[in-house]
Image (tube, rainbow, N blue to C red; front, side):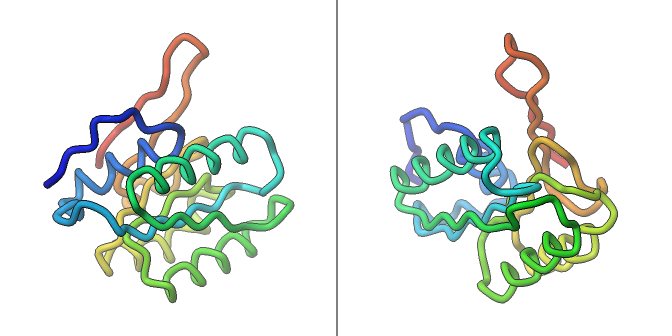
Length: 145
């Protein structure tokens, strides 16, 4: 596996970690990575999307950022179901409701899709790992499951 020596930013770093943990990184590039926030337009989520886009471009991956412009768990579940039809290698999300998104995330994991969360977790058995910002002094915590 070709190692990428450059620093990854934002969501891209977490997804690379998730892909490496899962063993999905047998290929060097060409991953399809899909992200959905609690809602689009919020600066924190837009910054995460920017980091994901930049990392994907640098690594030769495809990055899709999609979601509703307001927090609506039904729309988030629909977005995740739509993601499944596109056969991504990884899905990253900030869950609005940890239990509501769990069934579709479990389907994703059964299909071999790496699922990671950031900002807000999903039910523990529904995702592969979580990254959370704990303070300004700490970059992030990451826990593989």
